[in-house]
Image (cartoon, rainbow, N blue to C red):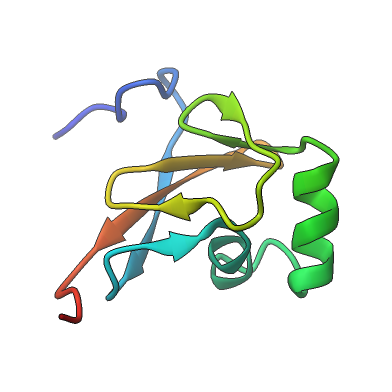
Length: 87
C-alpha cells in the first residue's frame, strides 16, 4: 500500500481531482473539487491567501496546474491527476 504523497504529512490523505486536459486553472480546480460555490468565491479565497499550491501560498487564480500539482485549501490537500489528455 503506497504512503502519502511527498510533502503531505503522515496521517493526511490526498484527494485526487482527475482532469482530461493538460492543465487547469486554480479557480477551476477549486470549483471542480466542490470547495467553493463559484468563481467569485474562488477569487476571494485565493486573494485572501487561503490557498497553497505545492506548499507555497498562491494569489493568482489563473495559475495553471499540471499533473501532480497539489493544492491545499481548508485543511485538505487535492492533487491534479491527468487522465487521457485531450490533444
